[in-house]
Image 1 (cartoon, rainbow, N blue to C red):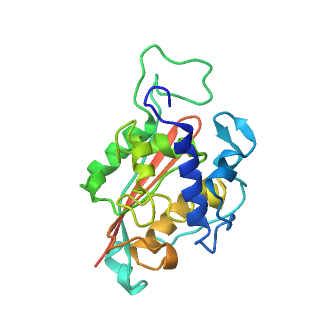
Image 2: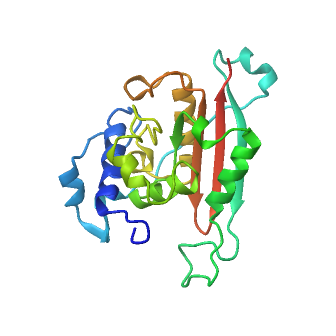
Image 3: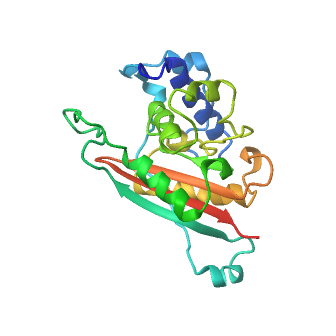
Length: 238
C-alpha cells in the first residue's frame, strides 16, 4: 500500500463489492450487503485489515463434471472448454507469508508465473477475459492479485475500484458471486466454486449477478501458502 499509494478506502471498496455480489448469490454464506461505514468501523484484526475484510468460515464443498470436448455436447447444451489449467510454485525470493524474512533479491510470485503460463497456453491475454475470479482471502489479497494476474498495473487498483470497473456491470467484473469473502474459504472447494461461477456466467445463467454482454472467456485464480498458485482459463463453446 505504501509503495503503490493504495489507501485503506480501497480495502473497504473490495469488501463492499464482495458483500453486494454475495447478496445476489443464493449459494453464498453471507447474504447481507454491508455499507462502507460498517466495514470501515468493524473490529481491527491486523490493521489496516478489519473484521469485514476477511473471509469466513472454512466449510463447504463443490464438484464439477469433466469429459472430452469431443463428446461434451452429448451431456450439456452449452459446454465449457478448459483452455488452460496451470499450477506453479514459488521460487527462492518470492514473497511468502510464512517466511520470517525477505530475500535480498525479490523473485516473481507464483501467481505472476502461473498467470503468464496460462495466458500463453490459452493463446489469449488479460484484455480478452470477460469475467474474473481472484483469490480474496482478504481485501488486500484481491488488490494484490488484480495486478499479479495482469489485469492492471500495481497502483492502478484503487482507481479501478473507485470507478466501478470491477463491478458486475464493469469492464473487468471480479468475484461476481461474492468471492471467498461472501462464500467462505473451504480451501480446495474454493477453486471449484470459482470454476462453477465462471461456467454459470459464460452460460448466462447467473440471474441478477449476470455480467453484461455475451461473455465468452472466464478466468479463475487461487493462491495458497506456502506459495502455490493455480489459474484456469475457460471458454464457452458455440
